[in-house]
Image (tube, rainbow, N blue to C red; front, side):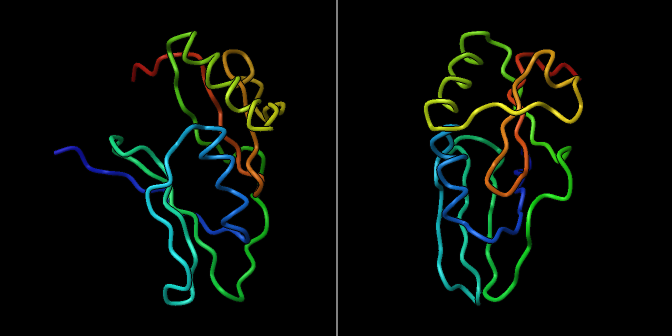
Length: 129
């Protein structure tokens, strides 16, 4: 059985992240909760994918922005049409590409920054490792 991966991260504003990951990246809101043991949160991913992201906010706790511009999630999109559609969806949702900290990601990809300063790369390549 394939293990499932959850990437969990704190934020100061759960609701600010939803448009980036749902509308921009085209992911689904899988589950959302409020005031669960002092936490609010959302799980975002795809229903059929072996991964999802969890963003939580703890009452009275501030986490601030990403510690650097090189904290990345990378989505490999080998089909050029799929990649172009993903870029267009991000722009249509109001998110513009930013220059990558590591210029490698600008060669075949586009980098977008979420409201917390964390970055997502849409890479037009296959991952063959």
